[in-house]
Image (cartoon, rainbow, N blue to C red; front, side):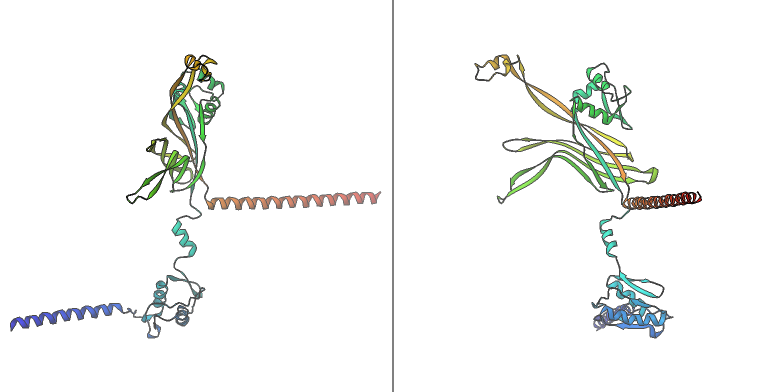
Length: 408
């Protein structure tokens, strides 16, 4: 008997607890009415009422109690899709607008309904760009030279400063004499980088492969590629043919970040460089890769150099007695007696010169263009005034001459 009574008591306690929770949930779900709100300021609206109708009703409350009307330039007629039960009219306005991704801007004599996120602001928020977004101009120069020639010249790429590179070479060598004769430098241990590379190319000691220029948005990745794409054909487990694309050549990837402003502006560059070559094979394709990853800090307009990317090439040439070594093979086989094929391993070094500069923002460019227009208008105005003065002076001169003639 006692056990049955205990079960009933537990059941009764659980029911009381559930009723209490439901009661407080119902109380909390209702709108809390401030004490200074009059009963006439409460409003109830069904979820099926069109938004335009609901705003017209709330506009009457706003005009009565605050002397302002509610204006919706868009005039949407879709349902409000929320229940408003005995709610303070202004809080109901905010609740309905938020539920429909809208808000109001308070003016002197009215409330204007506007989108919660303006279309232009939404696009700007999604893209993250605006008129003050900064860009970085990247100038790159890819130069390839014979490594032995660079060693003979004594060029040390680690000693680059202010666009000049120091050397520790043999100044009596023929190469050094050629370089000095080309007037690359006025000092024997300081060389202008770009003049040096151009002179190397003029003397047929090196080659400028490419000189690209790109603009990259601050914090975005830029890419420069001088090379080719190739495809590998494979088959999956079902026997379907699949093509996989790969890149080869000189590939430069850079991620610039502008830090600071004004005279304290500097650029952080995250640079990845790849030099790759393809070696076809009857069964597969081999890709030889030389790559480097580095991070540098540069002043605005400063240069940096990436070097040490080597490749080995086999140069084939025919040597022997002139004329006889080049005879046709069918001519008694004399070419094999008087000449031979010579193979030489040539080591080449790729040197990349990078220059980073901060580009004026769109806002700054607009201001510059407006300034130019104002200056142009001012020049035209001054020119007009000058011509007017000249015309008046000419008219005055003519009058004086006419007066003199009449006086005679």
